[in-house]
Image (cartoon, rainbow, N blue to C red; front, top):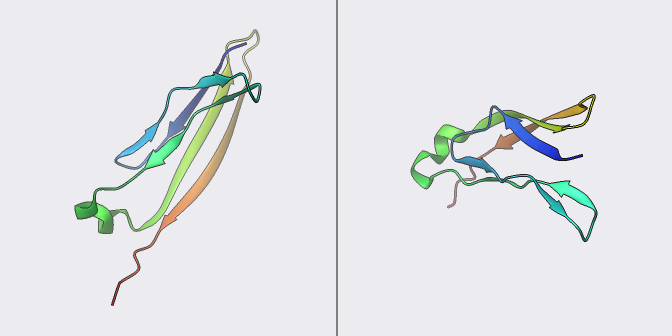
Length: 78
């Protein structure tokens, strides 16, 4: 069965790559990346709750989800 990975409530500028199958590990994967714009970094301070879901196209379809929290802090340089 083919697997699809999605994400809900991603922050601005966050990207989830398309789901791909990797033969070397016999697994499906997607990559989450997030690099806030420097000029807006202060707007991203705090906790960001993102839900990742994986579902297949089988019959019946199976879906699992995991909610994670990414906390952004800014360290002032002296």
